[in-house]
Image 1 (cartoon, rainbow over the protein chains, first blue to last red):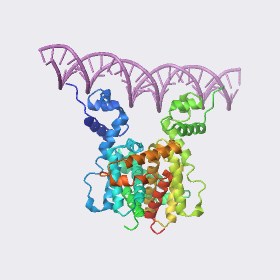
Image 2: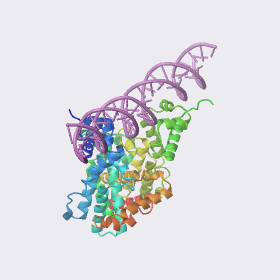
Image 3: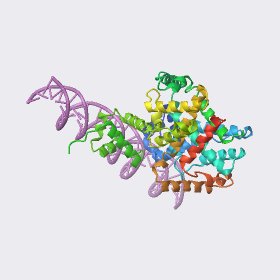
Image 4: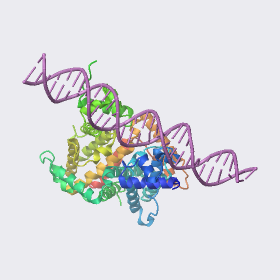
Length: 213
Length: 213
DNA sequence: ACACTGTCGTCAACACTGTTGACAACGATG
DNA sequence: CATCGTTGTCAACAGTGTTGACGACAGTGT
């Protein structure tokens, strides 16, 4: 068998696949090399280090956020859709949250997301300053929702439901004298899917940002 | 010099100090041992592994969130104050994901935060289900804000301002034809402190959650 | 056809991480 | 005083990202 010819694209592909299948901890340079059928260090011919590889992964994932948006549905639907896609992309890559923090080496796809969201808020009637604040607000909410659910995301639907159920049970069996509200609301905690909870929070935030709508 | 006697408290103290001084990456078991003046593996006599140590750190930091709250200031002020403190605590936290991901083994201080926030929303007139949704919403926003600013938090105020300025410059020098709104709003991006932006977002979210107020 | 050149996979090795088991020194207890 | 459990010390292991030397391959100019 001749040596497999690597490409940046194929490396990014298998990286995403490994992270999707085995989670973020199961992805190492050596497991990547094994999945590629090459020596682990061969990747360094195409990426300077692991950070650059993960940046390429993030660019790939974030590239799907702003494509084929239903512009006719109105600014609010577009905003929710962009944030939902962004959250999904962040879920597959927990370290993306930390990747967003670096200033200067920003990625082109991040600019597209920023531009799209700012544009929607301007369409909603906000001034430039208010639109910038609104942008920061929805980004913070989206990142937080993704960060909280990043761990549970690798689980199957059934396991996730069980985890939610166990969580509710813990809340329900607390001391009612010390935590009355928690015990009382335990049946409502972590209800439904994480995506539903996120959309609910996002809708509330948008209500607060643009009161008229 | 006789061997230093370690305690869970002193270990947690120096752990927090190291993370505060050298950041999250500068904290390793060996650097912790050096700071303690003992062999790095001595810590394992008091903590099962690094995860348990970090859990103790998180409990220490989160313990300050719900103490001495100005209950007379009204539910809204209390909610904002709790979330601000929680955000500050999370900023000092190494891996907030690993601390929040675990379901069953929750920490007592986390219960106190949950109870306090749920109580405020009940005071605001929300039903149990609505209060639970509101709790999830503000937690997601708080975690996200902390996650985004986690990296910049280790910088000094001056360096942080410079970073913000550089970030704005990047936005300002984009192609106006492709990113008109981003360029136009570049002067308003990352304005003020991160805490101010967070409070703004939180206020907007609370407006959306409890419209009457 | 041949030699050259630059690309790229391979291998061994380094520094670093968290963690474990054997060992020994210490303080409290009988 | 002897004993025992606690706890710091040391060496070592498995695993991580990364680097430099080596060599095989494809393409190119003459």
